[in-house]
Length: 264
Image: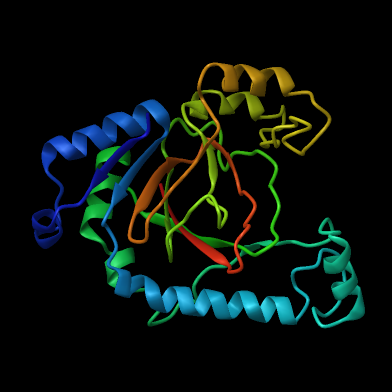
């Protein structure tokens, strides 16, 4: 049910979506916490970011930064080779937090000053919104499933993530799993101290002691998820930060770079 639209050549030229298309995206985002728009970011603007993120991911492999613990072993060490051979991936962090360097040419205006993204942000959040956070996630080959979680709670739809990939994002290379319409459940994850806890949903979701099994089962039964996003290159996913989601396994041979702008 997630609303999907595509930017036409005429809309790209004038930097504005048709009003009817914009309204469909707004309506879908308010209902599902998600909406998808294709053909937003020119491929050329993504290529330099992709090459740099692929380089940075490879550098972290070589330097052992994919290992949890301190100090991590080098990726060329016998311990690394032994873990890979045995399939013991628990000690590896293969969902890397990787953002483009904050310098040219990795901040192209076609992404960070994109008029259509700006139009959407204003329509969803209001005219005073701004980019407050820039980051990315690279799902490395061999990555496993993250714990189900939210990025925000108690924010009543005032924060927007604009997710995009530097290449086609598919089920094979680790597309993000989302649970539409769960934004209205996320305040239940706030502890008494106001901190957000992960969804302790146990097997087969792979996290916690099962306290939230009923909550997760009810969301699944009512059609709120899960869905793995398919995002062609140049496409953006507009996500309410309260939506439940998690990184999924990358079964391909190549790293998959997801980037994100967070607006408030």
